Length: 405
Image 1 (cartoon, rainbow, N blue to C red):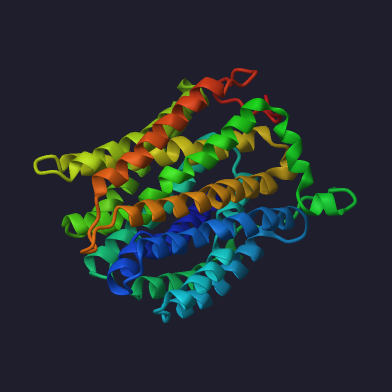
Image 2: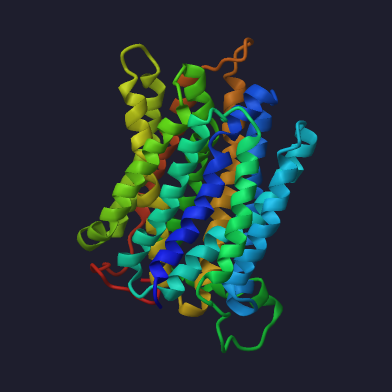
């Protein structure tokens, strides 16, 4: 299909521009402007986890069986834009929280659907998907730079910018390649509707370990997405959101070399490195705030390219290689549900409680003590993965097996 990669690239760019416009700086807006507590901020960020628990998996099943993926994406983004406009007008936790839950119920399924749509049309996923998915990273970078240099980090304006971008993407999705539901699905029953077939892949112990570690790593991840921007602003870093995009810039570089790494390294070691660095980066945050050590903060930010790509993106590719074609959208939705859902729900709650416990009477925070907690978690999860993730078959470079090893 002409310009297929370009069209998918634009889809990811807009999708992550929407996300990046409000997600990174929301904590600063809620803590400083609306004066929410750390616990309330954790709950607000947990709305994405609630949504990821409920909608992505089941909408993946629907996309696999009933509706074209591109039309479903269009509907979700158009409706999401309307809800974001409402959210930008809310100033109390009582109203803001349920409104954002409603938005994330619409937005979270788009991650799995856009990934599954791309996998459906790309010929060589290991080679082509990182090149397409890099559009999302650039969209996030552009969002962070825009919000930061316009000095909007403590305002509701990023929510409104995201709303406009949602309308644009909702219309654009109708130009994406047609991705119909899979044919010959057999007789529908309740078990299939609920995605019961997906549990057949859990016969592999290694797959169970993979999913378990992806769930657990969402706890230390939640500390980063929820509280690093408020931490950097409190520490005194100027244009914090812009400087945080250094992580996405490194993500672009890592994404471009990822196909080369897949050829030369087993995916186990790629993921193990990513899991370990999710923990180690918090060691850098814990000590980098002290005089003369600020370079540690920048290294910790730059590590984002490795931590994200070596875990989330690698897991998506691994799962696509090992799941039957009829279950690809369902499987991607399931992984989104249990990681961004269950894992992140616990993660944002734990992060919010930890920050609350280490909040001082004047509203500042004991950040060193806060960061050492996710540091220990991340490195422990990496050790668990190394010890127990042992696929029965070695994954040769460039192979695309169709069953779980």
